[in-house]
Structures are given as structure tokens and as C-alpha cells.
Length: 190
Image (cartoon, helix red, strand yellow):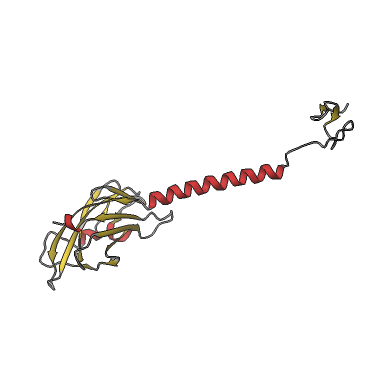
């Protein structure tokens, strides 16, 4: 016995397999699977774009001095800045970073984090200080065990008296790169 259902137009019993009602001729309405498939794909794409936008917003977040910025498996905090002079008597800005290794293996700031400092969209050149014993170049290259912190001081030759923009990124990663920005007002440099 054929399975029957009611015609939506006239109410007559019709076979489920019939393409039209034998009584009134109304065609059976069915939602094509293609439309359902397209709707599902559109929903998934919209969800993916929404999540990608959220991830991009998080990557583009601007941090303040003292805030912990997560860069891959590491946390970097720009703690302070002060002035000094280098061997050539150039005005130098010394930035103090706190570097925490949240990875599974030892890591050094110098080989894991790209820290670029800009003034008026020009990258500052790092320098070595001979007379300032507080800044130790070797600290950048010292390995830090997982879960541990190290304070690092890096000297940069100042271009002018404009604010600093510090861009932190991972040197090498298998994950999505996570670039963060820290703004440091020039007036706050001691």
C-alpha cells in the first residue's frame, strides 16, 4: 500500500511519491536539498568570517605600558623607558621588557620575539651601551625556562621627541602569527 499524505491545496489524499495532486493538479512543494546546502554553507562562511574578524581584532589590539601582551607562547610587558646616551653621544631610549616563557621548551627573547620600535613611522635602530651597566646585551640572548620571567633592557637610538610605537611579533611560529602593538607616550619616558 502506497504511503499517502494530504494535498496542501485541496486536502485530497495523494501518494508521497506523486509530483502533483491528481484531484486539483497542484504541484507538490518541496524544499530542494540544494537550497538547504547553500544556506548551510552561507551560515558556515558567515560564522568563519565572524571568528576571523574577532581573531584579527584581538591581533590588532593596542596595549598600554604595563599591560601583558600575549605573543604566541610568550607574554611580553613593556614596563618602562628612560633616556641615556650611547658611545657616540646619541640620545638613546632604554625600554624595559618583561618576558615570560609559556612554552614547553627554553626560549630566549632575542630568538623568539621581534620587537620593533618606531617613532613617526620610522624604525629605531638598537644600539649597545658601553657606559650604562644597567643594560646587559646578554640578557636578550639568555634562555628562560618554561613558566619563568626575565627582565630585558634594550637601547634604541631616538629620532626625535615623538611617541613610541612598539610592535611585538613572534620570529618563527607554526601557528597564526599574533602581532601586537604597545604605544608609549614620549612624555612618559623618564
